[in-house]
Length: 274
Image (cartoon, rainbow, N blue to C red; front, side, top):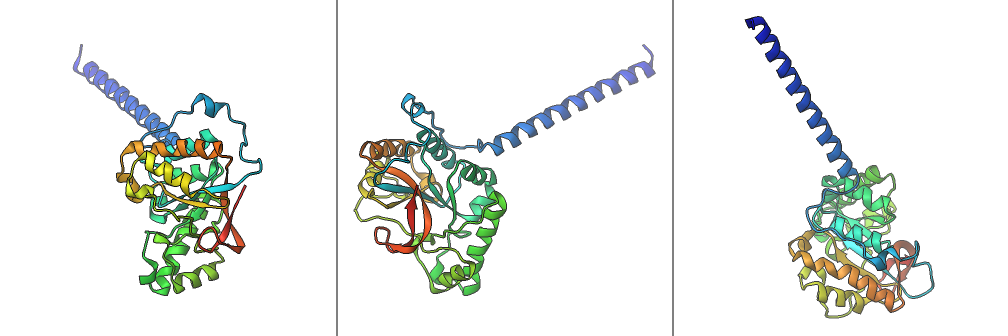
């Protein structure tokens, strides 16, 4: 074989290897993007529907009965949000997610999944700031920046705001009024049961949810922040609490703005609706 023949063979081999590498990269990129669009880039556990889940009717919460809202703050996160969404989908439950702006910017595929699966997307500020310490300009940026991002990601403008730590401020209230967002959405927490962010374990969190349940109650839960450091099996509280509440006759709804302040949820300008 001549030197020119060997050189042509080497060039052909190199061309083949480059084309093969390009195909692998393109295929991986497409699969990665598809997984992102499906909200499958999870770092934590996932939930597998049970036979009882599969037997549920499409809309089990349209019947009359006391209605509660499960609300999740601080997300989304790849450690917890996919599992929570899996459970809600399997149990046919809609929930309300008060999303944090910086976490939403990092996880747009999860924001889109929250909205696509019928849950309410609400505003929790950009970076979980302590609003009493913010200037009027900073307060408005926290709210407006998050609202604009969530609108861009979902195509729907959020109309609900929950203060980080539940701590309002006059400047925050003024910004909410200017932006026409229903703000200061609190929750019901009248017992001494520990919340999920305290990492008490699945049994304790399930007990907290069931204990706080009452008609129109908005239950405070989290899908990012401090709960990311809790033991992964703590998440098992969610399917158990949902099943227990349904067994007790409760139905599930979402949070919506209301002109009437809720006596159940610390005077929140919101109500639980189907």
